[in-house]
Length: 294
Image 1 (cartoon, rainbow, N blue to C red):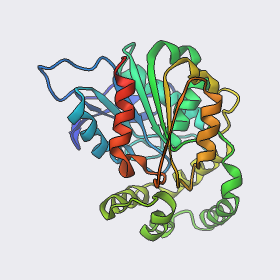
Image 2 (image 1 turned 120 degrees about the vertical axis):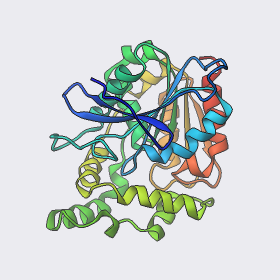
Image 3 (image 1 turned 135 degrees about the horizontal axis):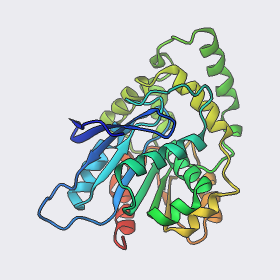
Image 4 (image 1 turned 30 degrees about the vertical axis):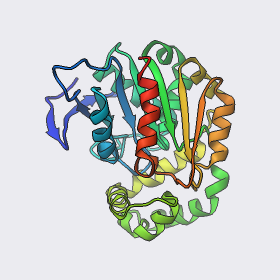
C-alpha cells in the first residue's frame, strides 16, 4: 500500500508498507526535465547507520543537474521517518528485505542502479546474497561507497563496550551526548571537510534515536556476507573507498574487489568515510559510468 505523496525537501514523500506490515518512508525525485529523454534506469539510494535520506539531498541535486534521471531515496528502519518497528534485534539481512520492499513499491520491474553508503552498501550486499535472482533481474549496476562485507568487529570492540554500557544504564540519554562535531570530524572525514557538511552530518546523526544506534551497531558487528558477496559479479559493480576512511578502511574495499569478479575499485586520495561530501564529483562520475549502458 502506498499513501498519497507529500512534497518534502524537493522529493515526493510516500509511506509504503513492507512485507511484514511495517511502514517505510520513501522519497521520489522525478526526472527534472519533463520534455527531455529520461535515463532508463532509476537510481535508488541507501543511506548508512545513524543517518537518513536527507544525507543524499545535496548529491541528488548534483546527479539531476547532470542526468535526467529519476531518483529514489528512503529511510532505513529506525532512521528518519521510518519507525524501528517491533523487531528487537534488527539485522543487515533484514535491511536487504527492506530494499526489496522499496523496489517493489517504487520501480517494479524497471531497471535500477543501486547506490549504498556504509550500512546502505551492506544492505545492497545482503540483498544480493539473499536474492541473487532479483539482483540479476532488476539491477543494472551497483555503486558501493565506504562499505564492507563483514569482519567489522575487530575494529570497534572497545567502543562497543562503552556505548552498550551507557545505553543499558540510561537508554533515554540524547544521542547528541555521544556524537559531537569534534569527534565526527576525526571519525568520518579525511583531509577535505567543509564546516557546513560536518554540521549537517552531525545534525542528522543526533536526530537518530539511541535504541536505533545501539541495535544496529550490534547488527553491523554480526554482518558477514563474505561467502555470498561474489553474487555481485553478475552486475557491473564499482567499489569506492576513502584512502583515510577510519570506519570501513581500504582493507574492506580491497576484500570486496577481490571477491567480486570484474568489479571496479576506486580509492579516493585523502578522503574519509563521507565520500558524497568529500568527493561528490568523483562519485557522480562513477555513477555516470554505470548509468551509460543502462
